[in-house]
Amino acid sequence: MTTPNPTGCVHCGIERRIHGRQYTKAAGWHSWQQPTQQQIKDRMRARRDERTRP
Image 1 (cartoon, rainbow, N blue to C red):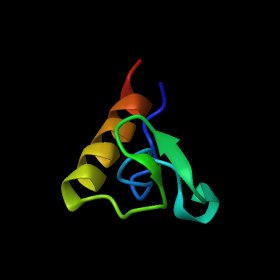
Image 2 (spheres, rainbow, N blue to C red; image 1 turned 45 degrees about the vertical axis):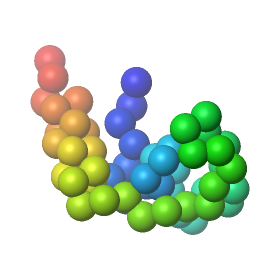
Image 3 (spheres, one colour; image 1 turned 180 degrees about the horizontal axis):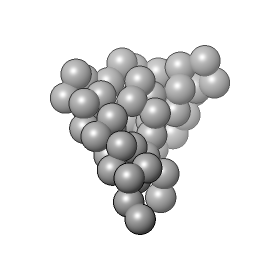
Image 4 (cartoon, one colour; image 1 turned 180 degrees about the vertical axis):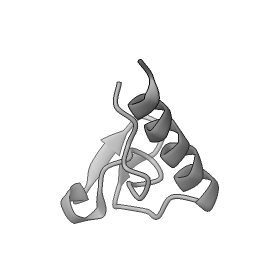
């Protein structure tokens, strides 16, 4: 599975410019919402780990 972009929606990880209205079981129908600073940091680390994994 690919880690969402660090600035993707807090609920689903989809980028703001293509988000529109999305549905997830946890959040229901929602518009893009900014991720928390911790979420951004965790996503950045996860993406780096994916790139460096053999």
